[in-house]
Image (cartoon, rainbow, N blue to C red; front, side, top):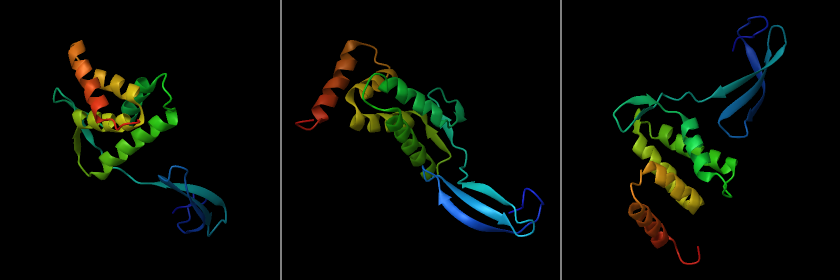
Length: 155
């Protein structure tokens, strides 16, 4: 590591800590030449993932789009912003851990719905209604019946 103050190429690590999300490592360092201290952060570099849209177009994966959809679906429910962020983070991690260079928007939508189904029925139905483009009340009722059928007694 090069010292940002004097440019010397050797430093020693004084302290190492993970960040709150355990996605970044913080290191406190000291230069072996000028003895000044500075902090560095290490984060895993992800290979870009492309999202293949329904019309065949491709765009870079953007976690914020997932979070925006989750927050709209969870509006006025007991699902907190923190819970929505955890869902978005788990989906992001699953996508990057798959080591695939492309993922379809359909796969992402299914991941969101799978997680929302376990968190909040209202948020799930809201997201599904937009994602699945229900054309009529009948298809919406079919989705609700499937949701009720798959719930365990007492839930």
